[in-house]
Length: 477
Image (spheres, rainbow, N blue to C red):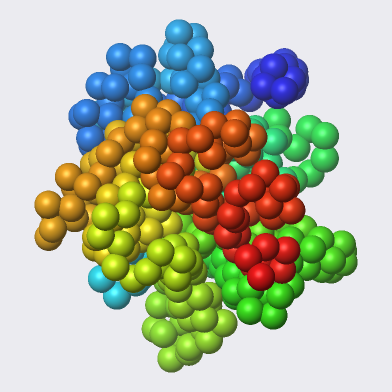
C-alpha cells in the first residue's frame, strides 16, 4: 500500500515538476514535520525550522523525534535528495520560503483557551526578516481570529523596520490522524484553505492552488472559504468527532445496566447513512493532543462571546468520567481496597501507532489502581519510554507509587501473577493473543477490555471472565 501511495506521488511530481516551490515550515512537531516531509516528497524545497536544538540535532543525525509510521523513511529519502533541511536559523528560514507555514504548538492555557504565544512569536520573526511577498499559512490549530493577530504581529514588525513588504495570512488547518498522518496528508479527503478577498489574498490563493495542485489531480479536494470559516472548520470537525465518541460511551454505560450489547447497537445505528459507522466505538475515553484541547478551546471561544456550548460541556464531562470506567469495574470486581492485588495493563498510548501519552486513559487507570494500593505491570509496543517520563510527572507528589510499576518486556511478561488484565489501547498486536497462555499466566482468568477487542461469547467459551464496555448482556449475568 505504501508503495502505491508513493508511486502516485511520483506520478504527480512528473506532471507538476515545473511547479517546485520554496517552503518554510516553522515547528518540527507532529504537524510541522509531517507537513514538511510530505511537501518535500512532492518535489518542493523545504526548510524546517525549530528553536529546539535537540530536535534539529536528531533530525540532522537521521532520526525523528516522534513516532509516526512511514515518516522516518520519507524524511531520510528527502534529506538524501536535498529537498528538506533542518535548522534553528530563523533569519535563513524566513528568507528561504515564499510560503511560510506556522506549525508550532498551541497548548491549552489555564482557562482552556489555546495558548498562541508561539504562533505570535513565529509571526513576529517573519515580520522581522521578510523583504518580499510572503504567504503566511496558519497550519497550527488556532481559534477564530488568529489570522488577524498574526497579521497584526507581522505588520508591527515591518513598521518597526520601516519596511514595506506585502503578505497575506492564510488558514490551512490540518486533518491528520496520529498513526496515519502520512497517508492522510498524501491522500487527503479534503483540503481547507481560507483566504482574504484582497489583492494580496488573491496572490496567496494562486500560490496555495499551485502548492496543492498534485493533490487535486484525480478530483478537486480543496474547499475555499474565508479565513475565519477555515479556522472554525478545524474546531468544528474535532468537536463533532469527540461528540460521537462521548455519545456512544454514554450509551454503552446505559447498555451495561439495561442488558444491551453496544456493539450490536453500533451496527444497528451505523447502518443508517445519515449516521454512518465512523467514531461510534465505545471505549474508555478519548485522549491525545487534539480532541481534549480543541473541545476546551471552542468552549472558551464561545464564553468570550457570552455563549455556553452545552453539548460540548457534556462531551468533555462524559469523557472525563469515561476514563474512570475501567477502574470502577475493577474495584467492583475486586473491592475498593486493592492492597495486595496486582494487575496487568496492555496499552499506554492514547491510541495505536503512536507513542503519544497526552490525556491518555491509561494515566487515569494507573493512578486509580496505584492509589488504591495495587501494583501494576504495563506494556505498550511503542510508548514505554514516553510512559516512564509521563508517569514520573503524574506521580511527582507521590514518588513512592512509581516503585509499584513494572515495565514488562512483552505482553505475556506483563501477565505474570496478575489478578486480571486491563486493555486500554487497541493495538493490533493485542487482538489475537494466545488465550491459553493468557489464562496460564494470570492468577485467575479475568479480562477488563477497555476497547471491546474481543467477543464476550468467545471469551466465555474460553473460560475467561470478561468485562467489556457496554457488553454485559452476554456475560457476568
